[in-house]
Length: 142
Image (tube, rainbow, N blue to C red; front, side, top):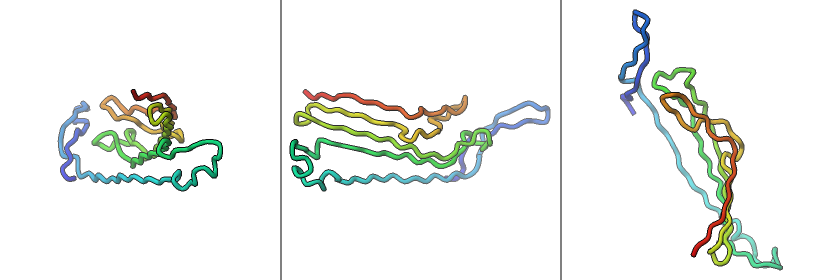
């Protein structure tokens, strides 16, 4: 994108700080979104590995989600103190359904590898993200 508009902070000849809105230059935005699905449970010969129980592959879901973010600055001036380093965050989720899908148990781990990164950039500053955290629960369909 060309002609990015932003706020520039400066100091005038009297030593007073001022802010002006102007063209701050060019910006490059790039991204990729991809999804991969692999039916690992479909490769299991049902009954031979688990002779004492029935296993239904459609009742188990496991997901691994990655979010990869490149370096950036939190302000239009590209101030070194507002530099945000690149980070990659992985989340793991799992769900098992019972009783023909009417009852489910789910759990997940967000920020699986406990990465330090910034969750939000505000005018007041940079807000750090949560460290590794877990959640879980039950789902019931009536």
